[in-house]
Image 1 (cartoon, rainbow, N blue to C red):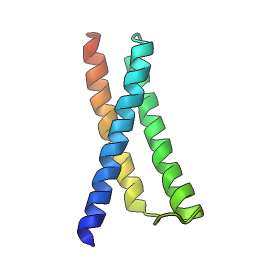
Image 2: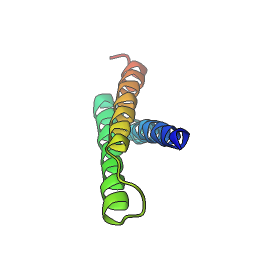
Image 3: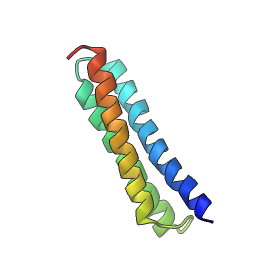
Image 4: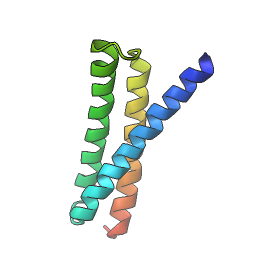
Length: 95
């Protein structure tokens, strides 16, 4: 059972990072002048999705198990994606 929880946290972390990078990349593609904006909007979207998933899907609809550890994994993943996005997007335009 512990391995399942570890895989769950891993997925929360990396899917959150992926959301930041996908949303940020899309915004960066549209508006290359604002790389920091793109990364932070991606970060906000990933956090919102993670929080909404935990509270709406897991806690209120009872379709899953609510976990503060999942929220922490979402935050860590989105922060990782934010740092990666800032490095990637800012280095692309040589700021």
